[in-house]
Length: 480
Image 1 (cartoon, one colour):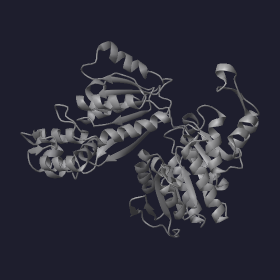
Image 2: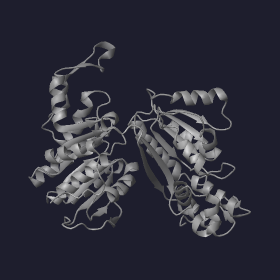
Image 3: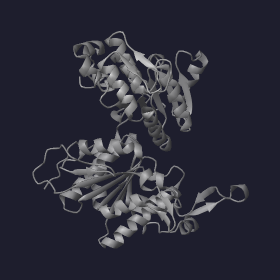
Image 4: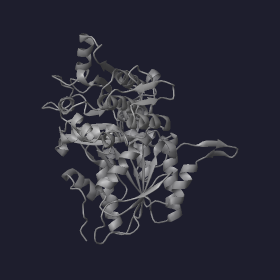
């Protein structure tokens, strides 16, 4: 039976899918935004169609779990059940003829999975016990470079968990698929621990043996610095036999555009204030402050501020969207990616700048108060790809015209612009003939709020005020 791709793969994805299915344990090392997740899901689908895989465990950074939920629904062609540590849900995909039965996904956040607690008998790993009891046939290790420290908790626990499962089953499963955009940023040694998780017969199980065979350190002050590798051809041969690497140039996707939405849930107190304001023209905050609006247009503005987490005076209402931004920026920093962030209100710009700085980016802020010299420094910082991950936070009006920021390939909308022209202009800052990589646009959206309506209007190029007045209640609740 021919495998029914739900979405058409690019040629580089097809090559990776074929090789990964054939090898079973394999590494897919694509530059960011080249479609690693689709490859993993089609590999799982082909194995499932052949009757080899029924349970697929996806281990990903916490911020990426939500993205994986959307990716599965978008790319996986068969009916499936899915779950995480807290809930279960089902596919809405139509069933193809010859669907494999009972394909299940478990989406687990890396941070919570490898968190351990101390007891009288030693460390307790409750989440890992849940996964071992679930007994996966295939494990997708997303952002596998995060397991590069052989002695780290995640690298050690993941390797031992896979080894225990394989010993218990006796059939070589679970198979492991490594996904990464930056597999070896500091050299061959960064591949040892991820490959040990995937197949510990490739490089062995002891990092000291690997170092003795392949690594030469300096002396004196450089005694912890790797000065060269030995037998590099042997290392390269093993890596090539067990993985595929693709750059944006090789994939032919330079300057291609990709979009994703990260959804945020308002905390209870903010949701209560939001509903009060949406239904009336006044709302009382948990702090005791009172928000008022004279008309539907001002009400829409107040609700957008509530979604962002700040009042006009800069009073913090909640930090859910800000925390989501921080998690995503942390992931980008680990990948060595720079970013451009857009926000509407001054308090949001200040908060986004602070959160980017706390995630170790070289950070610039550009709004109405920024001097001409500082604005120029910010623009020049992303004129070309910088050596250190850089984040420039713009107030929309200050960063939507006549600038080029092609040193970044990630644009994040903390809050969307007020009209399609500004949205179009801001989205083009990281594009152009000098952009050599695919670009991605990420929208932070509060579910069930005006955020949803605004983004929908921008995508359809609709006038936002006209859409608001057509049905204010539905618009403000994200239904219009």
